[in-house]
Length: 116
Image (tube, rainbow, N blue to C red; front, side, top):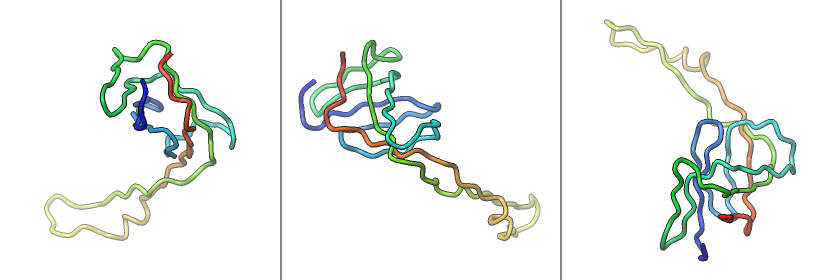
């Protein structure tokens, strides 16, 4: 696949991510150290602006590599508390029930997206 806008859709941690060359993506915690190279073999789609290769469910022999750039904290997930028969929701419970998940920041190199 040749072109300037090559992308891949990978699966990791039960989620799917669309990655283009040179892009930085936050994924779920993978227990890696800064600077480690990670290889993803669950590649669902590889494509460019004209065509795409779709796996069933994965593309055989396709690999996507990325480099770990450190750990970040994700956005807080908020929850509310409300009663069925009252019109009020208590806002102070939102602060007590929030949580931010740890994420890994991955940098996808320029020329490592290949369908072998």
